[in-house]
Image (cartoon, rainbow, N blue to C red):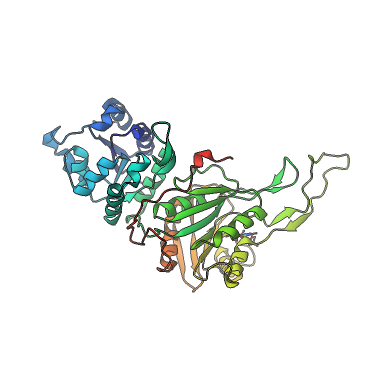
Length: 438
Ligand code: CTP
């Protein structure tokens, strides 16, 4: 990514301290960062901190440095605006087009993507005024992040907690990489996504596993929930890709467990995505006690074939156990061999699995597994083949979801929402992932 101008607006909320890590993320990536706190924000974090972290002067008023016409200059040159925390008051002022401080004045001059990260008490997030303001901002193309559920300022917990800085940065990076705004086009769509690798137990301490990091599946969950989807992430083992805010995470170990969770949850889903690396085989028996070395050398491991979860979901749909309009997406990790290239194997796999879309990745030689970037093709059952440009897994997730969104029938809209982002109530995340029992 080339050097970009990032404008970081800070509202007056206790979560202002967390934005320091976001500033760091962008300065360390080599971008030019300008911080614009509101007057209230400076009650929580001092201007000196923002100046030291950004390496640039900090002003809050339109009448500071008048000769530079800062609100016009900084607004016009920005490639990305992130406002965190976006308080209820700040969002209301943005909706009204007010210009009573440097930040709101600048917002009226920007033409780049804007990411607002709300943080407030649950009652304020759910108040009809905030609900309307969020819907208006989304209609205008602003990406308003759905807050996390968790500990709020006092002893209380609920929806309205500011998502972690890494989640904010991941979404900010996506907006920088996409040449267009992130659409809010999956509102009310229920999505079940599998991610990570399965672990097949040998004995109480050992398992057969794989190198999957879970990054691609987590990136899909993150992007889908920020497009309005209600996402459940069925997660195998990962290398800790960060819990997406406002996503329900269900931890599983083995392929059989993953199959149980996926087939159960797919019954109520509009979209099912199998991004997990499922082990094809599992030991026939799991030893009750740790297997000892023994005098005869290693004992052979006898394997059984695991269920093909993806093919099973397609069968369930054909049998009416899953609704006929449910979109089913698979992944194919291919190396290519003497029988054909990566794409040939992908085409054959799409036919074999019977899903609607197949994302084909080239793996091996350091590609895809555990890496930050990815590339591939999107093959659809109707014969369309689209190349996915090389980029971050977050960008790839976002491109996959563009295609998925076009396949979800319009009739699949759930109470309280419509596809245009006109949420009648602000979505409340399923649960507090900080309570996850890993
Ligand atoms: N998959 C699945 N259940 C399995 C194996 C794979 O649901 N037991 C899913 C994966 O989540 C992925 C797709 O099927 O969406 C393809 O996975 P992949 O490992 O590439 O294919 P396999 O079916 O295992 O075929 P092969 O290993 O022969 O290439």
